[in-house]
Length: 478
Image (cartoon, rainbow, N blue to C red):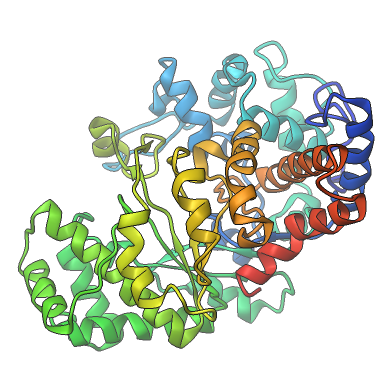
């Protein structure tokens, strides 16, 4: 058994014209557009796959470890229906026992597969099952063991190791995301391996920028030890960031990433910033001071980007670790982060006053507040040279989420103030599926614009390639 070149073949679980327009004329145009971009290389400029996979190139151990245990899109849905995360093999912070039998985990997953009906997760999983493993029957409790055995047998073959799948998926470049304190040893190992697959890192400094991050004081001390800078002083702290950014750039980074609770930015004077930092170091600080400091650091990072060329990504608006019990037992990134309303016009003004008119700077904005698309984000990106709009993210990385984004943002921002698609995933097999969904939705949208006279088909063809490939590559300087 060998992986097929994606997109997925036609099967009972992957209809060939899925997500295409219902109108026959629009469908024919969309199919022509899609056929021209379906197998373009994948540029994955932002995500959370583990660089260790590519460095060690070890076989994935079993279907449950590949599809269930690491994917919060999967286990959050099952948890919502009463399945204990311990029974899905999700490791606990204190090391207390959880289910370790992958077949038992898989059976629970298969028995609850109906919960994913109509969701993007179901689209991604069905695509992976059909394209990679040749499944032609939907997963269920009845076939759980047979499917487990079929996937498990495939995972033991060389063609299913991470580097081979990277090439099968047609990935041209993929960016992982590491914290400021990461030693980047897996990226160093990759660089020394001689493998030609391009895997780059991304600078994510939240642990040493957010005063509310657990262990913040100790994190500052570690940052100082790593860089040889005095991170108890404002000058030394900024110098430490510059040094770490340089190290990340040496390991291929073209971007930094900032996951703040709000889009607050600030542009304090040097003395004001120094005084605020002194309060942060002394700790603890008020919620307003913590937000102000995070906001000041976004502006500082933007200024650093003017010097070193890293693209600045801002991912605000997630009320992280909303379920205190889950956070205490399992830690971060366990499916309990919830979107909240986010202001951009007022919140970003200090940053934009400082650097928004710089055409050499790229700031990519994401949102979990769809009400901001037409009212705030599209007008901002449609004016400021430094701003670009990221694709629908997280809860809205979905067919309907992508459609809403196009309907609300494109008329004002235009296509070329967006950055194409990124998959933002921890689930390696979902990468080609996610890009395939995005390409289908894009081609369906472009076909409608051709049908109602807003585009000629040759323009739609050019845009289809831009959206699938060129925009992401240019925006992220890849």
